[in-house]
Every structure is written in structure tokens, then in C-alpha cells.
Length: 92
Image 1: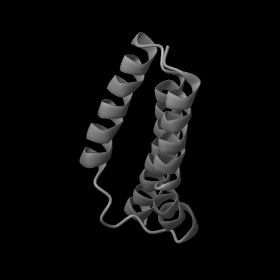
Image 2: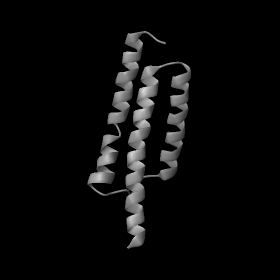
Image 3: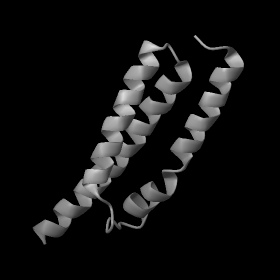
């Protein structure tokens, strides 16, 4: 495992990466807008994050594991919101 200060840098980077998704969450859940959100792109990003999560586990990096788990959770929240909005539009 890396030194605590190296893991701290990783945790800060991970936190910033998670915060970067907040505008997307607001668009989907508060403003009820999903136009322009590519489910294909989100799927590819999710697979990449999952692979980084596995890598983080293998190299025993707490920062990588925490950041990727939380980022995957945030992306899941966005995808659920998009799915909900698109399903509602198709029902109308």
C-alpha cells in the first residue's frame, strides 16, 4: 500500500471526480432533462471505472477503491434518473 500522503492525493482526486458529476445529477433529477446523455458513453465509462476498481483492489489502494465505488454509485443515480425520464416519455 502507498504512503498515506500518496493515498490522500488519490482521495482528493477521487472526491473532485465525484463532485464533477453533480451538474449532471442536477440536470436529470432536478431539472428533469436527459437530452444529450449517451447511455453508450455512460456504459463505457462505467466499465472503465469498474476495471479501475478491480485494479485498485489488486494494488491495495484505498483511494482508488473508494473513488471508483462512489463514482460508480453516482453514475448509477444518473442512469436510473435517465431511464425513469425516458420511460415516462415513452408512456405518454
